[in-house]
Image 1: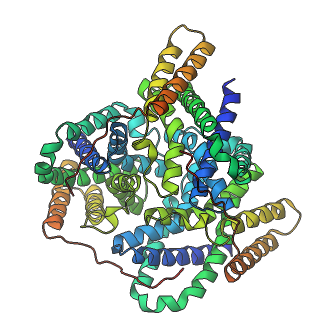
Image 2: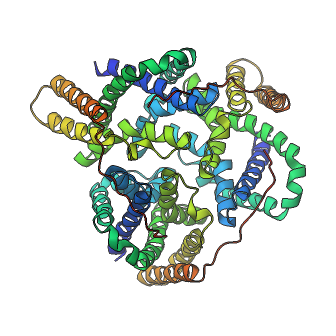
Image 3: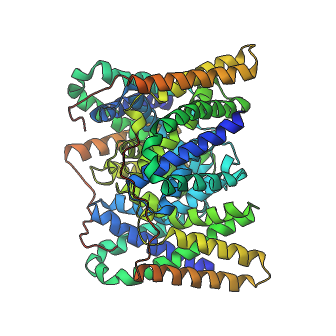
Length: 204
Length: 204
Length: 204
């Protein structure tokens, strides 16, 4: 089941990344790169940092093909994309929780310490979007927008404690996804943000 | 032969990167860093992603020295650089095809799947320029300018099929470089670009 | 002793990174990420490039906790931070030399060649700040400001020659830190900069 949701999430990430690339007037190649980097970049950085070779997409290169095909959907259907804002946000919310769980699983299988399990989930969930923003020349949204990383962290903590408990694995997975999804959607609906740190004076 | 062209290409990349750094008024150290990152960054990211250690320049550190020396040429000869625009573009076109072949070879020697062979060539060919643009604070040129990545991809595909065919290896190398060079020069001359995806509406 | 200074330096880096994040109005999560990336990013990139696993903070995840706690100090004490400009600059100068030595040591233990030892020290000393600037949307300061990278390079060379000489190790460490600290402070006081390469004409 996690696998199916993984593909849906990858596709949704690639499609919304393509829209970000389209807003910068990138060419079709740039759109595909941004789609691949956004959808697969989180897992890539996690694997580099943990030394977990081979990388997911090096082992399964068809994932790159999936991302490139997904990237062309918004190109073909650009006029309908604005109407699909909410479906995308909902898929992205499911994807965030799913990516987090997959990232935690990789670290758990490697026998990493609890903090690193949470960090692996966090990296998998958010780094793709950070790389997308850097390649598009923006300050990453995730550092200043509605709760996103917080959802990944709290979902990761929840999943970790579910994992070491006696609860059945499927229940923990479904529960974590349901929690992460609800938390993220509430954050968007009510514009819940982390407190900001506003500092004016020049230090350096 | 590939080795000789490799050094010429590294040097040309380092020199044109130094010009990009000079346009941002960087100091000499910054110029050297941008030169090294541009000339060696593509191979570095390829090796990180494939887990191919040790990295080329860690094994042959004098490559860093070559890049730094090359970076000083534009500093000393700044007034003549504008006149050298075409020689640089031609060397860069040879370099693009050469880097692509070298990247494909690394993946082939590791026994990677065909798509990853092409991707390894692509990463080697273009990532240096992407990192240069990010360090200079620009949206990477390669996503919106004349055909560049496409040249690397098509050259990579050509080289891969040449490699698995019965053709002599040298012929395949020379043929791929000739093709990549011609394709890139034609793209510059006739301003051939990939179709762009222009998307105005705000999704997020 | 190097360990103690390492923690002080990590903390100082994390705190001044938090101020940079605060100037971009990031939220608390963004502040923590920028703090961790700045304090630990140099060592991370060094380890990735050298294939030196596990990474320092993956093995000692409490370092992430230290950075996050340090990041909250400027949030709580924002009004006093401007007065602490000099203490921070001094700590940062000690940190630069310390990070450089630690980076050199990692490469020396791996039996790397002399140039790579210096580069490992340089990466450890400056990459954290480069990543901080990229994540904040700036052209990295280190490429155009007062001597910083130069201090790391010269300190690394000094440490390397001290290391292969017959001098006692502690003396070499203390001497290198004293030299790096003095050199950096003089560079700030007298606004010593590397010569700049200013290039106006458009090559591409």
